[in-house]
Image (tube, rainbow, N blue to C red):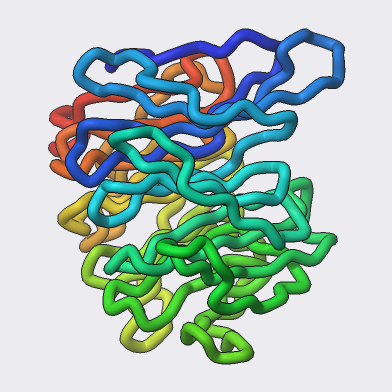
Length: 310
């Protein structure tokens, strides 16, 4: 395990991490208070060179939390959702900003590229709770223009594209399925708690969904729960499948990351680095390492998965 950075400030927090498809880069978003007690909030979007373990560039400084980041499937572009209600696109090689997408009414907390990279879905809502409305946008990534928009009265916490690229799964007060460019999404799964995070297995057959302090696995062929993964001591905040779909990682406000055997629903390993709140997890494309982000100390870590593979 190695620590990439610890941000200065009282309540510094890594909010999202994403590996590039070739495994060369790690993108992160964050929010923090540069001066304790000041009440001022800052946010950053950073691109890390994983070979040198150094920041290649800080792509954006904002006056709000930066909350979501995603690479296009070909690795050529990077998208970030910001607290200023915009979505921004960069060319990963040149680091030139390619587009600014405006229209959201709230902080943009969820992003997902289509499998062919031609479209980008973004979701927004009130991150302090689901008391305020938000929306989901579909953008053309070549022109940074709106393709479609649907309102979401409960705000949006999480998004996932189906592997076939025909529909998007939306995490809110329920789990919804939006067939792209149709006017209304349909309720896929009713939930008893807010769907703070969700993850779809690489083959699209299993949906992992946060359920308070636990995680539920659903068989997508019948939209029915098949397992409950219990062990966290506080709310589960983040989920990620391994590239082969056999392992699920879950991060929690209890400061731990747990690894689960998807086939049998059993915990494989648990890691704790003293984070006060793990807010994001991600697997490297080769499945050999993983990254987690949260609050200080050790707010952005990468570790070898040999120990978790047993």
